[in-house]
Image 1 (spheres, helix red, strand yellow):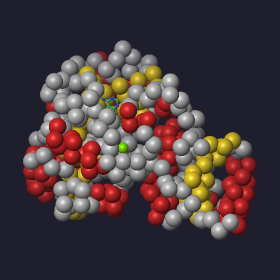
Image 2 (tube, helix red, strand yellow; image 1 turned 180 degrees about the horizontal axis):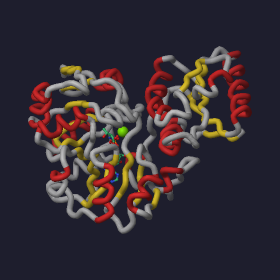
Image 3 (tube, rainbow, N blue to C red; image 1 turned 90 degrees about the vertical axis):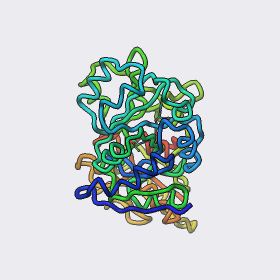
Image 4 (cartoon, rainbow, N blue to C red; image 1 turned 45 degrees about the vertical axis):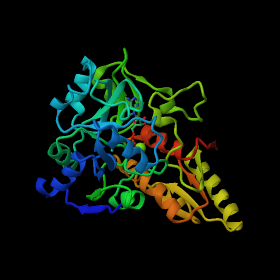
Length: 352
Ligand code: TXA
Ligand code: MG
């Protein structure tokens, strides 16, 4: 399939530039587009054939449900059975924005879109191109992250082109996705709201809006969740984001971590291996050898989070065989960052 690539300026565009993209969605085709979290791969959420195309373009298991994206709040009622009070509060404070809510679904949402579940995930993105595309197309847009299944989520147009060129009808490129981690997911379909995936909206910020909230234990698990700890978001159970090189997270006091990692780098390099270190601006001078990759400053809000996926992708491009990453627990969006890094490392964590 020939993929049309459309580059746009998110700060200066005319909705008419999105007419072809809207037509593709109405015709049941696939369009990758930028959002404020990561790039998404869109198709008509109410067309089961379009959802099947999404699964096949990504190589994604079809029991892993898709998020339905809307362009205004009034579109919500048709696809959900009820909107509980806690959801209304969250929508008022966080929409449009990087929050996905899980509702009981109405009959018009096909099971193909929800991976066979009776619930549907809904997000109202704030990115101007995402918003103009969804509104202009007039369809509900199912959109998982626009990566091949198992690869890091795409934060730049190049990542999407790398994974999906030739597999989708159109890719809209528009610079970096701002936040760089996928949306926070809160399930509001049960008795107590529950965070299923950490993201830009933290547990504390959700609690401030609605009071009590549960957190799916899988989200914060420091070791590989066992079989009894079944992820409530099906996607959280899959191997994800993993670079080809063997990745280890090293937890402990700053200088002990650096000492341990430097020892491993020495050892690996003497065996002729290419080794990388994932660190931050404050610590990067502690490492003299190996490929030193800083995620940015721990002191700048959101900076570490914004570079996680791009850095993981670069590991494969550089042909790195072993990766050692510091912990980022205390920094901004630390829970969300560590959730992604632990998964990338297959929960391989050493304490020093
Ligand atoms: O920021 C985002 O949410 C991005 C952008 C493109 O909007 N999208 C995204 O989609 O991350 P995806 O498909 O990569 O991740 C969706 C997650 C999966 O873990 C999936 O299992 C979960 O949401 N999910 C979707 N529908 C669900 C449902 N009804 N119940 C529980 N989990 C659900
Ligand atoms: Mg994804």
